[in-house]
Image (cartoon, rainbow, N blue to C red):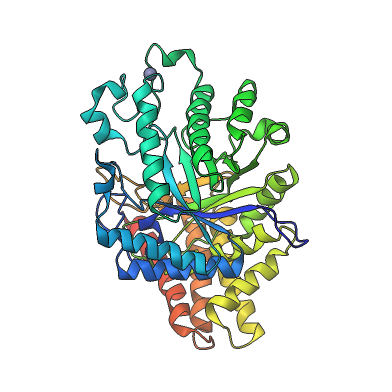
Length: 443
Ligand SMILES: [Zn+2]
């Protein structure tokens, strides 16, 4: 995955999400929604164009085949129409030079129905197959065979830990990282024995690399895979040492990302995450990190589109000035009629971003995903504006002040853009945020 030009670039530059998280419209069914209709197919095409233009070379898609459960007869997971849609999605990505990795649950995530039918597969965790049970490996291999023999996928992003692990007496002898290394290593070995040219990425969602003694297990996992993604950089304390010993690229999420609110109107928030992430990306690169997974967010919210364009450019050219990355992204989105209008637009984005992270002092760390809404499974309180509700009164007032500034400037610029329809969405989003703040302050 080497870059051919002389720019300093991450090698694995990926957008990541469930199908619903690429959708330009809100989806109200329980997460994760995996429908592929004409509109969502068009949404994906926009992402492919954006990736090609800005520098992302991979997209990880979760939910191509199933949401939570593989049926016992795997081929029944999709009908003919879905099969055509998935293949057409892959063709359309390949035309743009973008590689598609399917999300793949390893021994867990997707196996609950199979476990219900074959209870010997689980030894206590109803969501995870037991690593010590030989039939588990067979089921894992069946799933691998299904996805690779039937579809022109470029590879997989594997996750083994999100739903926990087996803790039976047999499996207990393995430490946490050791256990997941074993599952990933087995699955990788099987894939490589049959499909040597596929890209394999391991993502550690659910298992931490914070213990230095676990480095040998992570090294074991790195054999014959392309990248290991330590999504929240849990290995920060010994990151450089870990990277040196790996046989593959090490990567993390692209700094802090807004978790995509599946149910929200796409103009309900305006929270770019651009300049904020540059110091983190540089430090990761300088420590030898060569992989990035950027959480996707709907392009129908312009702060999402500008964020993704900006990040694609910076991870493809780590020494690029953030100012020009932002200017180019704004140019591509809104086609401003003059450079002074472009300056004004950049200012709107900067005021909104700094208003949140700096002026209102909202600290979400250097790297990770945070939910601004009620999260994937909103509880009794419903789908609330969590990011505003958790602010102190003082911070909320400060944030309101900055969003007001951005809103006024945005309105002023409204008539001087080449793409007024899209700029209107900026103004509309800022206005919605102001209304939400006002309502929360009255509660
Ligand atoms: Zn077990």
